[in-house]
Image (cartoon, rainbow, N blue to C red):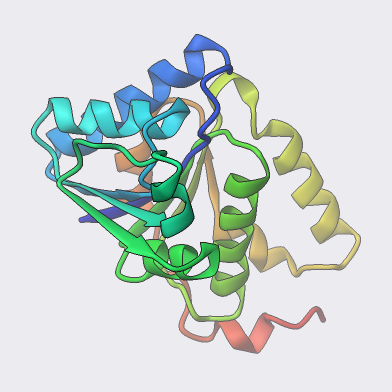
Length: 192
């Protein structure tokens, strides 16, 4: 299984976030999952990659050239693929993935997450999307998305496009328990 992980590059966040990212990398690798992520060496990105690599896992980084020029790439990855820009990076991260896991993060992580959710709503991406809710990070977003649905910007069915999990140990069981997104997703993409 190939798992796309969206993660922050900030090294300044609380240690609990780094620990959860590392545990996720270890868990995915220990269960034979390939990790594809943004290719960075710092913050949750680096912790994720280091965790997976410590267990012998395959870790594929997708890094824009300008970030490689700034030496932001992780030097020890199984594979580091350089791309021209952020748009190509997002496309390559999601293409061929069997699931998405969003770790806590800033605007880049949220942009990637919302693109995946949007593509799922439009019937282009069909795999599970999980938000790892370390320290309750995604609880406000979950409440906001419920408001989006209640105020008719999305349909009630759209709430099933993602899952919120509080513990790393719940990630793989939740992926396994999540049914493939409905093939008729475009029939209810528009709000009714």
